Length: 481
Image 1 (cartoon, rainbow, N blue to C red):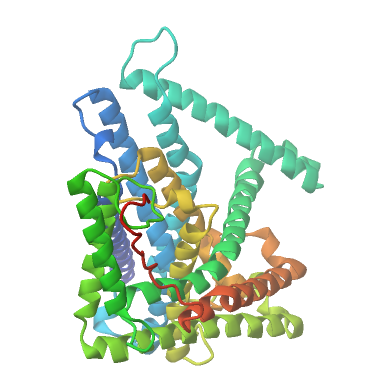
Image 2: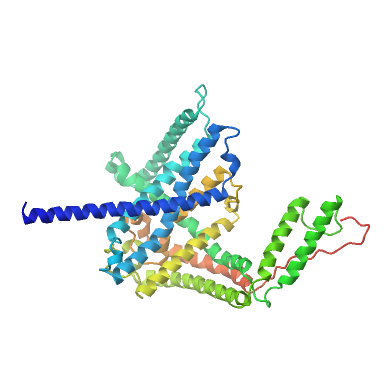
């Protein structure tokens, strides 16, 4: 064997080992996400749906659907973390191009992760989640033998008919828009036109949903932070709230013990035991907050509020600056950038600091979009409850989070949060080249964010209006409540 053959064999071995290493890393990352999502779903699922005391068949079907939901949730979490991971990987490779401990990090690995997430997200949205819902609702065709096989057969048939219906609708939409008759007549256009068109529609739905949820989440974050953190004494009187809660708990306890109506005026109409449990929970939380240290009161709350204001203001400022870029430079369009090799060019003009800031902003917008989604009146019913969330609601949550996370790369690029080039099929969205659509989207996001912040977030952060617990007053004896 000559030197040339030895060199070619060494190159093939190196490529083989790199491919095996990438597959192992992808498998470990997805396994970690799957285990994490399994614990999350187990924390919220309703146990009565998975017990085999009444019907072993229903319990087995629910377990299969739960596994599919865990898979979809793991994919959505991976899609949400993929853009920050890619930006950080690019900066690490740029800073340490020959580092021994970062040799496993390569452009091929990051591209492979994008392609895998793209494939699994579309597979989950188009097939797995509809299959999970139809599988739980199926009972088998009339006259067939009952069992999991009959349910599987019915679900497969219904899913096939649904897929044909969606494909026909996409074909009609493509025939209306596309002027090339040859592409419509070719079966090969299924992969070249119809499926990318379907992905484009899903991405458009996702970015519209993010447009509605993220500004509302930016304002709601101030309210949630105010409830979780211990404010200074000047902004919150915990002793008064704790005294009111103890009085309410004592009143409800006497009412339960005496078996008659309480003499306290109450606005609650729930059962007394539920009111007592709620009052005890509030008292426990208030007692924990009263025992908080002076550092948590004087430093924790102001620092958290300052960070929220800085991140929120910076997000809106970046979008406003991106609007000016769109008006002055055509290269600011999402579809105008060309993909560069990983580790060659920094994602930000500020270098590593700017890239770290982009990662923080992307993660903050992810958190705000989820908070805004579950805080909006339209989707508040999907909010999962601990140990009391039925399986159809879990499926709805997984689909919603998958749509939001899948549209995150397009959303970040449209707003100019990051200039990181969209890798793989994530960037093949036709409407990203429409200047008026991108400009209108940025203006709408800025207007909605400013409106939500001015009407709710900043006023609550300043304590205006204050919302103390209502004080219940006693009526004279002999009068009913």
